[in-house]
Image 1 (cartoon, helix red, strand yellow):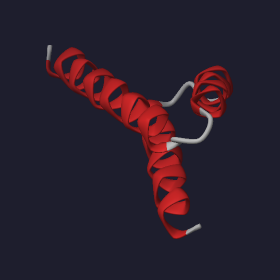
Image 2: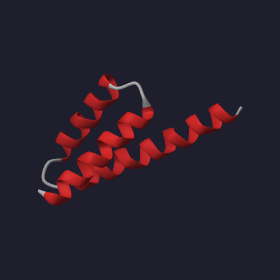
Image 3: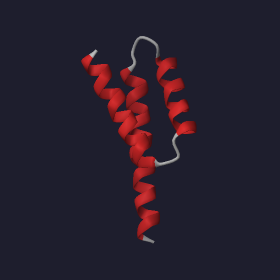
Image 4: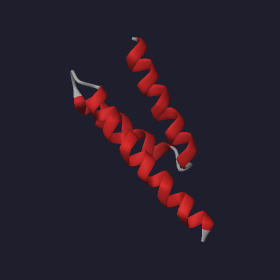
Length: 63
C-alpha cells in the first residue's frame, strides 16, 4: 500500500513539474510540450524524469 501511495505522490509531482516547464518556456510552449513528451517516452523511472525536468528548469533560468 505504501508503494502505491508513493507512486501517486510522484505522479502528482510530475504533473505539476510538466505544467511548470510548459509555462517556463514562454517563447514557444510547443518546445516544452515536445520535450516533456520525449522525456515521458524515453524514461520509465519517475525519479529520473523529475531530475531531468528540474535540470531543464534550472538551465532555462540560467540561460
